[in-house]
Image (cartoon, rainbow, N blue to C red; front, side, top):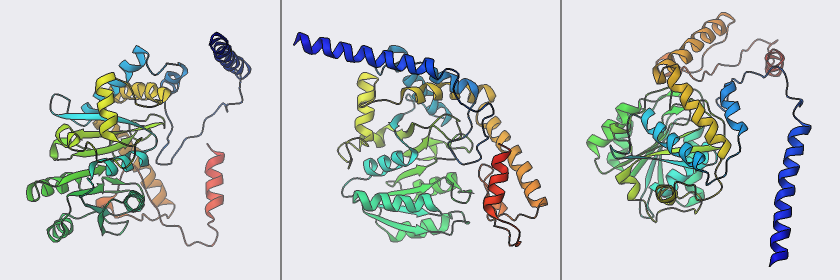
Amino acid sequence: MASVQVAMARRLSLRSLGAWRTVRRFSSSSVPSREPLLFTPGPLTVSGPVKQAMLVDYGSRDKLFLDAVLEVREGLLQVAGVSKEKGYECVLMQGSGTAAVEAMLGTAVPKDGKVLLVINGAYGHRQTAICKYAGIPYETLVFEDSEPITVDRVRQTLRASRCSHVSLVHHETTAGVINPLEELVKMMKAEFPDLKVLVDSMSGFGAYELDMTWGIDFAVSSANKCIEGVPGFAYVLCATDALKQTQGNARSLTMDIFDQWANMESTGQFRYTPPTHAILAFKQALVEFHAEGGMDARKARYRANYEVLAREMQKMGFEFYVPEACRSYCICTFKTPEHPKFHFQTFYNLLAEQG
């Protein structure tokens, strides 16, 4: 037994030494002096202090890390206009935004339930794929990807169906369409009070208003979107009563939101290896979010960027794909020009050369 302990101690110490030597070797590494500006929906360009926050190594049980987890959970509820005291919870889930959507669908919808998937883009269609893989009963209501979801069609479909849950995308990343979330949720809760409402607000939360008290039961988003953190985890905002009803529903061990929440409540920890550096980065990103002025200020910055982009792209002859009435100021889609000299890859390469 002693020899095993010595061998383990030696292995651990050598791993630490190897990591230290690696840091020394790459301390003046080949990171480019000018980082590119990322204009993709996410991951996106993050601030220097957010990057700096990741230069600390915490263990999964360190008090400073557990404090950071709690601070992030409470901070996200604040952005959604609610709190634990008001009957809401925030559950952090390792992985991508899609992992959180899959966790939400797999945990919220019981084995004898059925979910209406309201779709107006690729991310709604991805929910169909998730339900097929997990064996979750579902129906679909499909709109064009350049159109918003309409209240009347959702109402008519729900009246004709026997769905226990409905799931929709708040801000459809595919083409940059913003759906009328508040109006949709309030209609559903008024006319179908037992219906559970699930929302994918991946690329909208933090830049478009989302208030859980409208009647949203579950909403998911990701660390690397409008709060401007780095990839590594996503989060689920839940009405506590709705969350407590999901015990035993999950189709996956690692994506069981109820079990993840129960463990966080009892120990403060993730069940499995936490994304420590991404959490620390996100904690700093939340500080910067509020220092900037919260959602109103972030919305104003994004809108100002949109107005410059819209004006200059239209000057060059580009046409928008999405009508202005439902067009996002976070994501813009343009029609490919028909001019014979336009080549997308050339356009892309020239932008990349300018960072």
